[in-house]
Amino acid sequence: MGWKFAVLLLAVLVKDAHAVCSCYQAGNYTGATAPISNAYNNSDFSACFSSACSYVAYSGDDTKGWTGFTFNWVLPLANAGGSLQIFDGTPDLSSNPAPLIQINEGENVIANTAKNLIKSTSPRITIQYTQTSTTTANVYYGSIKATPGLQPIAEPTSTTAIPSTKTYDTQYFKYNPCLITHDIMVVVNQRTNGGIKALTALNGIVSNFVTPLCVTTVPNTIDSTRLALASLTPYQPYFAIRGEIWGMDTTDVTTNLPQSGVSIDGDIDAALTGLVNLTFLVNQSKSTDSRTNVQRSVVLLTAEWPSAATLNDTVKSVFDAKGVNLLVVGYNLTIEEWGRLASNGRWYNVLNAANSDDSAVANFVNPFYFNDNSSPNSWCPPQSVQNLTGNTVFFQEPVNYSGPKSSDEIWVDPFDGQSTRYCNFADNQYTYTNPNGKGLQVQVFYELEAGKDFLKFYDSSNNLIASFTGFEVSGSTFSTTSSTITARFTSDYESVYRGFYVQITPQ
Ligand SMILES: *[C@@H]1O[C@H](CO)[C@@H](O)[C@H](O)[C@H]1NC(C)=O
Ligand SMILES: *[C@@H]1O[C@H](CO)[C@@H](O)[C@H](O)[C@H]1NC(C)=O
Ligand SMILES: *[C@@H]1O[C@H](CO)[C@@H](O)[C@H](O)[C@H]1NC(C)=O
Ligand SMILES: *[C@@H]1O[C@H](CO)[C@@H](O)[C@H](O)[C@H]1NC(C)=O
Ligand SMILES: *[C@@H]1O[C@H](CO)[C@@H](O)[C@H](O)[C@H]1NC(C)=O
Ligand SMILES: *[C@@H]1O[C@H](CO)[C@@H](O)[C@H](O)[C@H]1NC(C)=O
Ligand SMILES: *[C@@H]1O[C@H](CO)[C@@H](O)[C@H](O)[C@H]1NC(C)=O
Ligand SMILES: *[C@@H]1O[C@H](CO)[C@@H](O)[C@H](O)[C@H]1NC(C)=O
Image 1 (tube, rainbow, N blue to C red):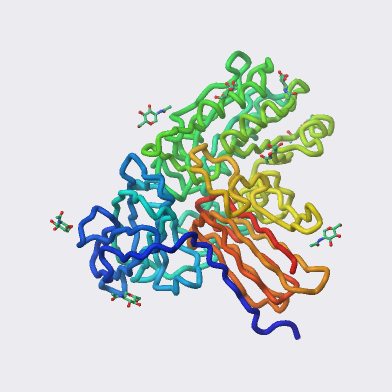
Image 2: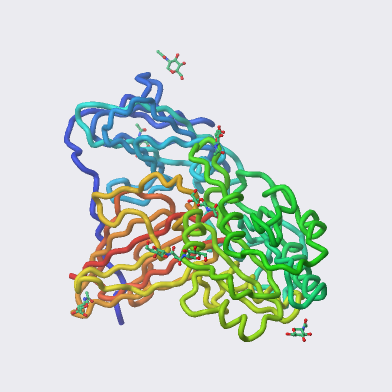
């Protein structure tokens, strides 16, 4: 029969909560803008030393939820180990619920960043400040605003209505390509063995690819696609930019496609590394955040595959450093060319198209952009549950998960571009059974798009026992009496974050 009711034990991870003190403002709050501050003004919410301090903010209107969170730490930091958490609704904080968002000492939140745009589903949120130091306090200030029209969490959202009436070919595409949220650099190789006919076919693939996309040029949007276009040329730097980088719409792309071929081979490796360096910028300044949480890809279309092109580890490292995925769409490649391009163990995705219609486009959009498993996807290969030392079992996404793996580690502010992110449209399962039949202790570290991307745990009878979304810093721990646990990770079509690491200790 299995376990009807799995027992869920949540370990409290708050440290050093000893000192006696109360919040400056203990009461709850009703209004359209909730202050989050310890400006030592007792009409504001304020920190106290050590013991957690929380209050409930109510929008005053049940149709209004909360968003537009901004937050600043006043320098110099006191290094008091401070962190601020915002919870959807009014959960019992002693049960260690997952926050909608968590901000650690030193991390500011500015307009139009993912954490700023976080949304509650409830007209009430709970705001809690905690710090570990009992002797010194940080100074911080911020606010969050009530706005109408916030909807309850829907999950996964990948199949919900699309914000557009653009038509697409339902026969071929798994979902509406309008849902694709990427920064896409389209690169066309002007050198072909098949003459202008082959170039025309490549251009046809590009047109059919970009036409059903929903395109934006706004740098801080969290959905839609931004486009850039380049072609490969014979001489250094071996590429030509064919329009404003990230400023093109679909028509700009289709009208700027190269119309004439070249007869000399360039250097594909040098062209791709140069293009990625040039176009996928990473600005260390947070105030110029530009679609940090959006997936990125280069789509190279080519009707030849010269033997000089290696796409070797030097090329890979440039793509990895900027978190950019590569797809090579070949057209009418020979068996020999295909053999070199599609070699085993490659880090990029490949496809050899035989025509340029919607079916050819769907052959790469479905597996690589919609992640539908119709073909192996090197951008985010699934990993199995691993048993490292014989008694430490773990699984993680992405493959290069870069976050904490134990409670004494923390998420390091990532402003490193978009490396080590999971993919959109993920739907992966991980199952583990304790060989000795006893229960499990599970620790979860995660950074997921709040309310949209979920990591859920089920027991052997498929009862949901835990669900995680949003941001966390110190790992969440729970125990089960069930000896088998299944985790399911789903992501929607929008932002991608740094994923999760789950460590299971068999009891
Ligand atoms: C604030 O709201 C919480 C949750 O609704 C409630 O338990 C608590 O008693 C309230 N505190 C005050 C001072 O009204
Ligand atoms: C405290 O904050 C309130 C509201 O923000 C403001 O009206 C008041 O002047 C402040 N008091 C002091 C002493 O700063
Ligand atoms: C790309 O940028 C990296 C780091 O900024 C640099 O080391 C590398 O040489 C650049 N590569 C090219 C091809 O420009
Ligand atoms: C990053 O953004 C800042 C602030 O807008 C700007 O001053 C700086 O030039 C930018 N750096 C790069 C490398 O683009
Ligand atoms: C990749 O190829 C380039 C050019 O052929 C070469 O300079 C580089 O050393 C190669 N990198 C690796 C890791 O093999
Ligand atoms: C594919 O290439 C071959 C030569 O390798 C050529 O004969 C054929 O016409 C090409 N097919 C298309 C559809 O371009
Ligand atoms: C991990 O692997 C070792 C050796 O294969 C095995 O003895 C052990 O039972 C495994 N541990 C778990 C928790 O599955
Ligand atoms: C992950 O990291 C390892 C080691 O740093 C590297 O060899 C590998 O290429 C990376 N994989 C991806 C997908 O970035």
